[in-house]
Length: 495
Image (cartoon, rainbow, N blue to C red; front, side):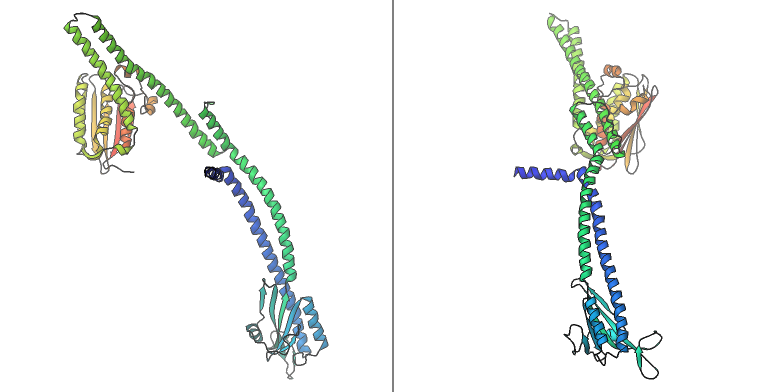
Protein backbone atom coordinates (compact mmCIF):
# COMPACT_ATOMS: atom_id res chain seq x y z
CA UNK A 1 0.00 0.00 0.00
CA UNK A 2 2.86 2.35 0.89
CA UNK A 3 4.64 1.57 -2.38
CA UNK A 4 1.48 2.32 -4.38
CA UNK A 5 1.07 5.61 -2.50
CA UNK A 6 4.69 6.56 -3.25
CA UNK A 7 4.18 5.68 -6.92
CA UNK A 8 1.04 7.81 -7.05
CA UNK A 9 2.83 10.76 -5.41
CA UNK A 10 5.74 10.36 -7.84
CA UNK A 11 3.39 10.34 -10.85
CA UNK A 12 1.51 13.30 -9.44
CA UNK A 13 4.76 15.29 -9.15
CA UNK A 14 5.66 14.46 -12.75
CA UNK A 15 2.27 15.59 -14.06
CA UNK A 16 2.42 18.78 -11.98
CA UNK A 17 5.94 19.69 -13.13
CA UNK A 18 6.37 22.68 -15.45
CA UNK A 19 8.70 20.68 -17.72
CA UNK A 20 6.06 18.00 -18.28
CA UNK A 21 3.36 20.58 -18.99
CA UNK A 22 5.52 22.47 -21.49
CA UNK A 23 6.46 19.14 -23.12
CA UNK A 24 2.80 18.11 -23.29
CA UNK A 25 1.62 21.48 -24.66
CA UNK A 26 4.29 21.55 -27.40
CA UNK A 27 3.49 17.95 -28.31
CA UNK A 28 -0.23 18.68 -28.34
CA UNK A 29 0.23 21.84 -30.42
CA UNK A 30 2.21 19.77 -32.94
CA UNK A 31 0.03 16.64 -33.08
CA UNK A 32 -3.42 18.24 -33.15
CA UNK A 33 -2.82 20.40 -36.28
CA UNK A 34 -1.17 17.50 -38.14
CA UNK A 35 -4.09 15.22 -37.29
CA UNK A 36 -6.59 17.84 -38.40
CA UNK A 37 -4.55 18.47 -41.56
CA UNK A 38 -4.38 14.74 -42.31
CA UNK A 39 -8.11 14.34 -41.84
CA UNK A 40 -8.84 17.47 -43.88
CA UNK A 41 -6.64 16.37 -46.79
CA UNK A 42 -8.22 12.91 -46.93
CA UNK A 43 -11.72 14.33 -46.67
CA UNK A 44 -10.99 16.93 -49.35
CA UNK A 45 -9.48 14.31 -51.63
CA UNK A 46 -12.50 12.04 -51.19
CA UNK A 47 -14.95 14.85 -51.90
CA UNK A 48 -12.97 16.01 -54.90
CA UNK A 49 -12.61 12.49 -56.30
CA UNK A 50 -16.33 11.79 -55.86
CA UNK A 51 -17.26 15.09 -57.53
CA UNK A 52 -14.98 14.32 -60.49
CA UNK A 53 -16.44 10.79 -60.79
CA UNK A 54 -19.99 12.15 -60.67
CA UNK A 55 -19.18 14.78 -63.29
CA UNK A 56 -17.57 12.22 -65.61
CA UNK A 57 -20.39 9.72 -65.22
CA UNK A 58 -23.10 12.36 -65.72
CA UNK A 59 -21.42 13.58 -68.90
CA UNK A 60 -21.19 10.07 -70.32
CA UNK A 61 -24.74 9.13 -69.44
CA UNK A 62 -26.19 12.37 -70.78
CA UNK A 63 -24.57 11.49 -74.11
CA UNK A 64 -26.01 7.97 -73.78
CA UNK A 65 -29.46 9.43 -72.99
CA UNK A 66 -29.34 11.38 -76.27
CA UNK A 67 -28.40 8.18 -78.10
CA UNK A 68 -31.35 6.36 -76.50
CA UNK A 69 -33.75 8.95 -77.94
CA UNK A 70 -32.01 8.91 -81.32
CA UNK A 71 -32.26 5.12 -81.60
CA UNK A 72 -35.75 5.04 -80.06
CA UNK A 73 -34.36 2.57 -77.52
CA UNK A 74 -37.21 2.90 -75.04
CA UNK A 75 -39.60 1.32 -77.58
CA UNK A 76 -37.11 -1.01 -79.24
CA UNK A 77 -34.32 -2.09 -76.84
CA UNK A 78 -32.77 -4.43 -79.36
CA UNK A 79 -30.22 -1.91 -80.69
CA UNK A 80 -26.84 -3.60 -80.55
CA UNK A 81 -25.04 -0.27 -80.68
CA UNK A 82 -26.81 1.01 -77.56
CA UNK A 83 -26.51 -2.32 -75.74
CA UNK A 84 -22.79 -2.42 -76.49
CA UNK A 85 -22.44 1.14 -75.27
CA UNK A 86 -24.34 0.30 -72.06
CA UNK A 87 -22.14 -2.72 -71.39
CA UNK A 88 -19.03 -0.66 -72.05
CA UNK A 89 -20.07 2.06 -69.61
CA UNK A 90 -21.09 -0.48 -66.96
CA UNK A 91 -17.71 -2.18 -67.19
CA UNK A 92 -15.83 1.14 -67.34
CA UNK A 93 -17.38 2.45 -64.13
CA UNK A 94 -17.84 -0.98 -62.51
CA UNK A 95 -21.49 -0.19 -62.02
CA UNK A 96 -25.06 -1.04 -62.89
CA UNK A 97 -27.40 0.76 -65.25
CA UNK A 98 -31.19 0.49 -65.27
CA UNK A 99 -33.23 2.14 -68.05
CA UNK A 100 -36.82 2.88 -66.99
CA UNK A 101 -39.52 3.95 -69.45
CA UNK A 102 -42.44 6.30 -68.78
CA UNK A 103 -44.53 3.38 -67.44
CA UNK A 104 -41.87 2.71 -64.75
CA UNK A 105 -40.92 -0.55 -66.45
CA UNK A 106 -37.27 -1.57 -66.52
CA UNK A 107 -36.40 -1.71 -70.22
CA UNK A 108 -32.80 -2.73 -69.63
CA UNK A 109 -30.73 -3.84 -66.60
CA UNK A 110 -27.01 -4.22 -67.23
CA UNK A 111 -27.02 -6.94 -64.54
CA UNK A 112 -30.06 -8.64 -66.20
CA UNK A 113 -31.80 -9.01 -62.81
CA UNK A 114 -34.65 -6.46 -62.83
CA UNK A 115 -35.31 -6.36 -66.57
CA UNK A 116 -39.08 -6.35 -67.33
CA UNK A 117 -39.94 -5.44 -63.74
CA UNK A 118 -41.57 -2.26 -62.49
CA UNK A 119 -39.64 0.16 -60.34
CA UNK A 120 -41.17 3.10 -58.50
CA UNK A 121 -39.03 5.18 -56.14
CA UNK A 122 -38.78 8.78 -55.03
CA UNK A 123 -35.62 9.30 -57.08
CA UNK A 124 -37.26 7.98 -60.26
CA UNK A 125 -40.41 10.05 -59.78
CA UNK A 126 -38.40 13.22 -59.15
CA UNK A 127 -36.26 12.48 -62.21
CA UNK A 128 -39.40 12.27 -64.37
CA UNK A 129 -40.06 15.81 -63.15
CA UNK A 130 -36.71 16.90 -64.59
CA UNK A 131 -34.47 16.60 -61.47
CA UNK A 132 -31.09 14.86 -61.62
CA UNK A 133 -30.41 13.28 -58.23
CA UNK A 134 -27.06 12.10 -56.92
CA UNK A 135 -26.37 10.18 -53.69
CA UNK A 136 -22.96 9.07 -52.39
CA UNK A 137 -22.79 6.14 -49.97
CA UNK A 138 -19.27 6.09 -48.42
CA UNK A 139 -20.04 2.99 -46.32
CA UNK A 140 -21.01 0.73 -49.22
CA UNK A 141 -18.73 2.67 -51.58
CA UNK A 142 -20.98 3.53 -54.48
CA UNK A 143 -22.58 6.55 -56.13
CA UNK A 144 -26.23 6.40 -57.13
CA UNK A 145 -27.56 8.87 -59.65
CA UNK A 146 -30.54 9.41 -61.94
CA UNK A 147 -30.34 10.85 -65.45
CA UNK A 148 -33.48 11.96 -67.29
CA UNK A 149 -33.92 10.70 -70.87
CA UNK A 150 -35.36 13.82 -72.48
CA UNK A 151 -36.71 14.47 -75.99
CA UNK A 152 -37.90 17.54 -77.86
CA UNK A 153 -41.22 17.45 -79.68
CA UNK A 154 -40.76 18.63 -83.30
CA UNK A 155 -43.36 20.48 -85.40
CA UNK A 156 -44.02 17.46 -87.62
CA UNK A 157 -44.88 15.39 -84.51
CA UNK A 158 -41.53 13.55 -84.28
CA UNK A 159 -39.02 13.60 -81.42
CA UNK A 160 -35.34 14.33 -81.27
CA UNK A 161 -32.82 14.28 -78.47
CA UNK A 162 -33.16 17.17 -76.06
CA UNK A 163 -31.36 20.22 -77.40
CA UNK A 164 -31.34 23.83 -76.28
CA UNK A 165 -33.17 24.54 -73.04
CA UNK A 166 -35.41 27.05 -74.79
CA UNK A 167 -37.34 24.22 -76.35
CA UNK A 168 -39.86 22.14 -74.41
CA UNK A 169 -38.10 19.05 -73.09
CA UNK A 170 -40.16 15.93 -72.49
CA UNK A 171 -38.81 13.28 -70.07
CA UNK A 172 -39.45 9.93 -71.77
CA UNK A 173 -37.47 7.77 -69.36
CA UNK A 174 -34.91 7.56 -66.60
CA UNK A 175 -31.47 6.03 -66.33
CA UNK A 176 -30.87 4.79 -62.77
CA UNK A 177 -27.11 4.29 -62.34
CA UNK A 178 -24.97 2.84 -59.54
CA UNK A 179 -21.24 3.50 -59.88
CA UNK A 180 -18.59 1.83 -57.72
CA UNK A 181 -16.12 4.01 -55.80
CA UNK A 182 -13.76 1.16 -54.87
CA UNK A 183 -10.91 2.83 -56.75
CA UNK A 184 -11.46 6.04 -54.77
CA UNK A 185 -11.49 4.08 -51.51
CA UNK A 186 -8.30 2.29 -52.53
CA UNK A 187 -6.57 5.58 -53.28
CA UNK A 188 -7.76 7.00 -49.95
CA UNK A 189 -6.42 3.92 -48.17
CA UNK A 190 -3.01 4.37 -49.83
CA UNK A 191 -2.98 8.08 -48.98
CA UNK A 192 -4.05 7.32 -45.40
CA UNK A 193 -1.20 4.83 -44.91
CA UNK A 194 1.33 7.29 -46.29
CA UNK A 195 -0.12 10.10 -44.17
CA UNK A 196 0.08 7.84 -41.09
CA UNK A 197 3.75 7.12 -41.75
CA UNK A 198 4.49 10.82 -42.27
CA UNK A 199 2.52 11.73 -39.15
CA UNK A 200 4.34 9.07 -37.11
CA UNK A 201 7.71 10.47 -38.23
CA UNK A 202 6.50 13.99 -37.40
CA UNK A 203 5.43 12.83 -33.94
CA UNK A 204 8.91 11.39 -33.32
CA UNK A 205 10.45 14.70 -34.39
CA UNK A 206 7.92 16.61 -32.24
CA UNK A 207 8.69 14.47 -29.19
CA UNK A 208 12.37 15.28 -29.58
CA UNK A 209 11.68 18.98 -30.13
CA UNK A 210 9.21 19.11 -27.22
CA UNK A 211 11.68 17.40 -24.88
CA UNK A 212 14.52 19.67 -25.92
CA UNK A 213 12.46 22.87 -25.75
CA UNK A 214 10.94 21.93 -22.40
CA UNK A 215 14.44 21.42 -20.97
CA UNK A 216 15.65 24.71 -22.44
CA UNK A 217 12.60 26.67 -21.25
CA UNK A 218 12.63 25.23 -17.73
CA UNK A 219 16.40 25.45 -17.24
CA UNK A 220 16.34 29.05 -15.86
CA UNK A 221 13.74 28.02 -13.28
CA UNK A 222 15.92 25.07 -12.28
CA UNK A 223 18.82 27.49 -11.82
CA UNK A 224 16.59 29.63 -9.60
CA UNK A 225 15.67 26.52 -7.58
CA UNK A 226 19.32 25.47 -7.34
CA UNK A 227 20.40 28.93 -6.18
CA UNK A 228 17.63 29.03 -3.57
CA UNK A 229 18.65 25.55 -2.35
CA UNK A 230 22.26 26.74 -1.99
CA UNK A 231 21.08 29.71 0.04
CA UNK A 232 18.90 27.41 2.13
CA UNK A 233 21.83 25.03 2.74
CA UNK A 234 24.07 27.94 3.65
CA UNK A 235 26.48 27.58 0.73
CA UNK A 236 25.53 30.93 -0.78
CA UNK A 237 24.69 34.19 0.89
CA UNK A 238 24.83 36.54 -2.07
CA UNK A 239 21.84 37.80 -4.12
CA UNK A 240 20.66 35.42 -6.87
CA UNK A 241 20.62 36.57 -10.51
CA UNK A 242 18.71 34.71 -13.30
CA UNK A 243 17.69 37.38 -15.85
CA UNK A 244 16.69 34.92 -18.62
CA UNK A 245 12.95 35.63 -18.38
CA UNK A 246 10.90 38.45 -16.95
CA UNK A 247 9.21 35.86 -14.70
CA UNK A 248 12.49 34.51 -13.33
CA UNK A 249 13.68 38.07 -12.82
CA UNK A 250 10.54 38.82 -10.79
CA UNK A 251 10.98 35.63 -8.74
CA UNK A 252 14.65 36.34 -8.11
CA UNK A 253 13.93 39.98 -7.23
CA UNK A 254 11.28 38.91 -4.72
CA UNK A 255 13.62 36.25 -3.33
CA UNK A 256 16.52 38.69 -3.02
CA UNK A 257 14.26 41.14 -1.22
CA UNK A 258 13.19 38.33 1.10
CA UNK A 259 16.82 37.31 1.56
CA UNK A 260 17.76 40.89 2.40
CA UNK A 261 14.89 41.14 4.85
CA UNK A 262 15.91 37.84 6.41
CA UNK A 263 19.44 39.17 6.83
CA UNK A 264 18.12 42.32 8.46
CA UNK A 265 15.80 40.26 10.64
CA UNK A 266 18.60 37.91 11.59
CA UNK A 267 20.86 40.83 12.46
CA UNK A 268 17.98 42.40 14.42
CA UNK A 269 17.39 39.18 16.30
CA UNK A 270 21.05 38.80 17.12
CA UNK A 271 21.09 42.37 18.33
CA UNK A 272 17.89 41.73 20.24
CA UNK A 273 19.37 38.68 21.95
CA UNK A 274 22.37 40.77 22.89
CA UNK A 275 20.17 43.65 24.10
CA UNK A 276 17.75 41.44 25.99
CA UNK A 277 20.64 39.53 27.56
CA UNK A 278 22.08 42.85 28.65
CA UNK A 279 18.71 44.21 29.80
CA UNK A 280 17.93 41.04 31.78
CA UNK A 281 21.43 40.60 33.13
CA UNK A 282 22.07 44.21 34.19
CA UNK A 283 19.23 44.46 36.76
CA UNK A 284 20.12 41.05 38.15
CA UNK A 285 23.78 42.05 38.47
CA UNK A 286 22.80 45.33 40.16
CA UNK A 287 20.46 43.56 42.56
CA UNK A 288 23.15 41.01 43.41
CA UNK A 289 25.72 43.75 44.06
CA UNK A 290 23.29 45.66 46.29
CA UNK A 291 22.22 42.53 48.14
CA UNK A 292 25.83 41.37 48.62
CA UNK A 293 26.70 44.82 49.98
CA UNK A 294 23.92 44.58 52.55
CA UNK A 295 24.90 41.04 53.50
CA UNK A 296 28.57 41.96 53.86
CA UNK A 297 27.85 44.80 56.28
CA UNK A 298 26.85 44.46 59.89
CA UNK A 299 24.54 46.89 61.62
CA UNK A 300 23.52 48.53 58.33
CA UNK A 301 21.99 51.97 58.93
CA UNK A 302 18.26 52.13 58.25
CA UNK A 303 18.69 54.93 55.73
CA UNK A 304 21.24 52.94 53.70
CA UNK A 305 19.11 49.82 53.95
CA UNK A 306 16.10 51.71 52.55
CA UNK A 307 18.20 53.26 49.80
CA UNK A 308 19.54 49.86 48.70
CA UNK A 309 16.07 48.25 48.82
CA UNK A 310 14.64 51.13 46.78
CA UNK A 311 17.35 50.56 44.17
CA UNK A 312 16.61 46.82 44.19
CA UNK A 313 12.88 47.55 43.67
CA UNK A 314 13.71 49.82 40.71
CA UNK A 315 15.83 47.08 39.15
CA UNK A 316 13.00 44.58 39.66
CA UNK A 317 10.59 46.99 37.93
CA UNK A 318 13.04 47.36 35.05
CA UNK A 319 13.32 43.57 34.74
CA UNK A 320 9.55 43.25 34.89
CA UNK A 321 9.09 45.72 32.03
CA UNK A 322 11.43 43.81 29.73
CA UNK A 323 9.65 40.54 30.50
CA UNK A 324 6.19 42.09 30.00
CA UNK A 325 7.22 43.47 26.60
CA UNK A 326 8.46 40.04 25.55
CA UNK A 327 5.23 38.39 26.70
CA UNK A 328 3.14 41.01 24.89
CA UNK A 329 5.05 40.37 21.67
CA UNK A 330 4.45 36.62 21.96
CA UNK A 331 0.73 37.20 22.49
CA UNK A 332 0.55 39.48 19.44
CA UNK A 333 2.02 36.69 17.32
CA UNK A 334 -1.12 34.66 17.86
CA UNK A 335 -4.08 34.94 15.49
CA UNK A 336 -6.94 37.42 15.77
CA UNK A 337 -9.11 34.56 17.07
CA UNK A 338 -7.79 35.50 20.52
CA UNK A 339 -9.34 38.98 20.34
CA UNK A 340 -12.01 39.70 22.94
CA UNK A 341 -14.22 42.06 20.92
CA UNK A 342 -16.56 44.37 22.83
CA UNK A 343 -18.33 47.65 22.14
CA UNK A 344 -16.08 50.18 23.91
CA UNK A 345 -16.37 53.93 24.55
CA UNK A 346 -13.13 55.08 22.87
CA UNK A 347 -13.36 58.59 24.41
CA UNK A 348 -13.41 57.16 27.94
CA UNK A 349 -10.63 54.69 27.04
CA UNK A 350 -8.33 57.48 25.81
CA UNK A 351 -9.06 59.60 28.91
CA UNK A 352 -8.18 56.65 31.16
CA UNK A 353 -4.90 55.99 29.28
CA UNK A 354 -3.82 59.64 29.51
CA UNK A 355 -4.79 59.78 33.18
CA UNK A 356 -2.39 56.90 33.87
CA UNK A 357 0.46 58.46 31.86
CA UNK A 358 0.17 62.09 32.98
CA UNK A 359 2.22 61.51 36.18
CA UNK A 360 5.13 60.31 34.00
CA UNK A 361 4.76 63.37 31.75
CA UNK A 362 4.51 65.68 34.75
CA UNK A 363 8.00 64.66 35.88
CA UNK A 364 9.38 66.41 32.75
CA UNK A 365 6.76 69.16 32.60
CA UNK A 366 5.17 67.76 29.44
CA UNK A 367 1.55 68.67 28.74
CA UNK A 368 -0.66 65.75 27.67
CA UNK A 369 -3.79 66.96 25.86
CA UNK A 370 -6.83 64.98 24.63
CA UNK A 371 -8.94 66.47 21.85
CA UNK A 372 -12.18 64.51 21.24
CA UNK A 373 -14.00 65.84 18.20
CA UNK A 374 -17.05 63.59 18.71
CA UNK A 375 -18.30 60.68 20.80
CA UNK A 376 -16.89 57.40 19.47
CA UNK A 377 -17.90 53.82 20.27
CA UNK A 378 -16.29 50.89 18.45
CA UNK A 379 -15.99 47.10 18.52
CA UNK A 380 -12.44 46.47 19.78
CA UNK A 381 -10.34 44.39 22.15
CA UNK A 382 -9.96 46.82 25.04
CA UNK A 383 -6.75 45.30 26.44
CA UNK A 384 -4.86 45.19 23.13
CA UNK A 385 -6.03 48.61 21.95
CA UNK A 386 -5.11 50.09 25.34
CA UNK A 387 -1.63 48.61 25.00
CA UNK A 388 -1.24 50.07 21.47
CA UNK A 389 -2.36 53.61 22.40
CA UNK A 390 -0.38 53.53 25.65
CA UNK A 391 2.80 52.64 23.76
CA UNK A 392 2.32 55.54 21.34
CA UNK A 393 1.63 58.09 24.08
CA UNK A 394 4.37 56.75 26.35
CA UNK A 395 6.91 56.94 23.50
CA UNK A 396 5.78 60.51 22.75
CA UNK A 397 6.48 61.37 26.39
CA UNK A 398 9.78 59.49 26.66
CA UNK A 399 11.28 60.83 23.44
CA UNK A 400 10.11 64.40 24.03
CA UNK A 401 11.87 67.52 25.21
CA UNK A 402 11.27 68.94 28.66
CA UNK A 403 8.37 71.43 28.76
CA UNK A 404 7.05 69.86 25.53
CA UNK A 405 3.53 68.60 24.71
CA UNK A 406 1.75 65.45 23.56
CA UNK A 407 -1.58 65.93 21.80
CA UNK A 408 -3.98 63.01 21.27
CA UNK A 409 -6.82 63.71 18.79
CA UNK A 410 -9.83 61.40 18.42
CA UNK A 411 -12.22 61.59 15.47
CA UNK A 412 -14.52 59.29 13.45
CA UNK A 413 -16.64 59.02 10.34
CA UNK A 414 -19.41 56.58 9.47
CA UNK A 415 -16.94 53.67 9.04
CA UNK A 416 -13.65 54.30 10.88
CA UNK A 417 -12.33 56.08 13.96
CA UNK A 418 -8.92 57.76 13.94
CA UNK A 419 -6.43 58.51 16.68
CA UNK A 420 -3.60 60.97 16.13
CA UNK A 421 -0.71 61.15 18.62
CA UNK A 422 1.45 64.23 18.06
CA UNK A 423 4.49 65.50 19.97
CA UNK A 424 7.16 68.20 19.55
CA UNK A 425 10.03 66.03 20.69
CA UNK A 426 13.22 64.59 19.20
CA UNK A 427 11.68 63.34 15.95
CA UNK A 428 12.86 60.41 13.83
CA UNK A 429 15.46 60.62 11.04
CA UNK A 430 13.90 60.13 7.60
CA UNK A 431 16.07 57.09 6.80
CA UNK A 432 14.85 55.36 9.98
CA UNK A 433 11.10 55.79 9.39
CA UNK A 434 10.67 52.61 7.32
CA UNK A 435 12.25 50.49 10.08
CA UNK A 436 10.60 51.76 13.24
CA UNK A 437 7.84 49.11 13.23
CA UNK A 438 10.33 46.27 12.90
CA UNK A 439 10.73 44.08 15.92
CA UNK A 440 13.77 44.74 18.06
CA UNK A 441 14.58 47.95 16.12
CA UNK A 442 15.57 51.08 18.03
CA UNK A 443 16.40 54.43 16.44
CA UNK A 444 18.74 55.77 19.12
CA UNK A 445 20.02 52.66 20.87
CA UNK A 446 21.98 54.48 23.59
CA UNK A 447 19.08 56.80 24.42
CA UNK A 448 16.60 53.90 24.31
CA UNK A 449 18.72 51.93 26.74
CA UNK A 450 18.90 54.92 29.09
CA UNK A 451 15.12 55.20 29.25
CA UNK A 452 14.54 51.46 29.32
CA UNK A 453 13.44 50.88 25.75
CA UNK A 454 13.55 47.36 24.30
CA UNK A 455 12.65 48.13 20.67
CA UNK A 456 9.42 46.13 20.95
CA UNK A 457 6.82 48.79 21.69
CA UNK A 458 5.99 49.98 18.15
CA UNK A 459 6.03 46.41 16.81
CA UNK A 460 3.52 45.43 19.50
CA UNK A 461 1.41 48.51 18.66
CA UNK A 462 1.39 47.76 14.93
CA UNK A 463 0.43 44.10 15.53
CA UNK A 464 -2.48 45.11 17.78
CA UNK A 465 -3.81 47.60 15.21
CA UNK A 466 -3.48 45.12 12.32
CA UNK A 467 -5.38 42.54 14.35
CA UNK A 468 -8.26 45.06 14.42
CA UNK A 469 -8.06 45.32 10.56
CA UNK A 470 -6.72 48.85 10.89
CA UNK A 471 -3.49 50.52 9.85
CA UNK A 472 -0.88 52.90 11.29
CA UNK A 473 1.44 55.41 9.63
CA UNK A 474 3.95 57.98 10.86
CA UNK A 475 5.20 61.42 9.88
CA UNK A 476 8.25 62.90 11.54
CA UNK A 477 10.91 65.57 11.21
CA UNK A 478 14.09 65.24 13.17
CA UNK A 479 14.23 67.85 15.92
CA UNK A 480 10.62 68.99 15.35
CA UNK A 481 8.49 66.11 16.55
CA UNK A 482 6.53 63.06 15.40
CA UNK A 483 2.90 62.31 14.56
CA UNK A 484 1.38 58.80 14.50
CA UNK A 485 -1.94 58.23 12.67
CA UNK A 486 -4.10 55.22 13.58
CA UNK A 487 -7.26 54.24 11.66
CA UNK A 488 -9.49 51.36 12.83
CA UNK A 489 -12.97 50.20 11.69
CA UNK A 490 -15.83 51.04 14.05
CA UNK A 491 -17.22 47.53 13.46
CA UNK A 492 -14.82 44.60 13.72
CA UNK A 493 -14.47 42.85 10.37
CA UNK A 494 -14.45 39.07 10.66
CA UNK A 495 -12.48 37.34 7.84
